[in-house]
Image (cartoon, rainbow, N blue to C red):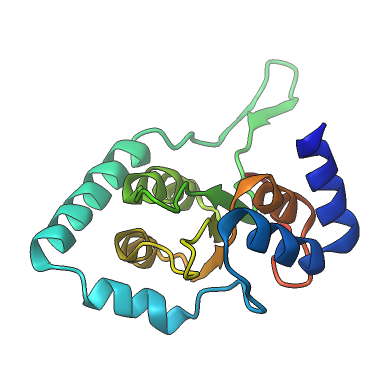
Length: 177
């Protein structure tokens, strides 16, 4: 019931509902949900070399594995002259939810964003709850940077899922979460 109420409220009131829930559940007030792209780049630049190397190695391995899974289109002419086949096409926009707040999950960024990009998704929108100062973990942002995510929003919980599912004034609607 509570989750349904949150989803409905976000659908009806958009960013105003997001502001209320962010203040209530995450403990900070904001007028701007999106993390500026320069802060995403800065997070990468300020990450220690050893951690950068680990993130890049993980990225490479995940890309390789998932590239082997990309389905192939099939077309052929059947015995009666009919054209038969299967065509795969990616969605335009995908949303990913990365847990956060007191913990950091850069692996969640990599394991959700990379398969989507390998599959051909054009844009990934990331949501993650911030700490009480309104910040997302630097390593999570660094992982977003190397996967090409440039739209990161400081929002969590059911309200983040509702925002991705329906869109708000600040957060675009996605095709799949």
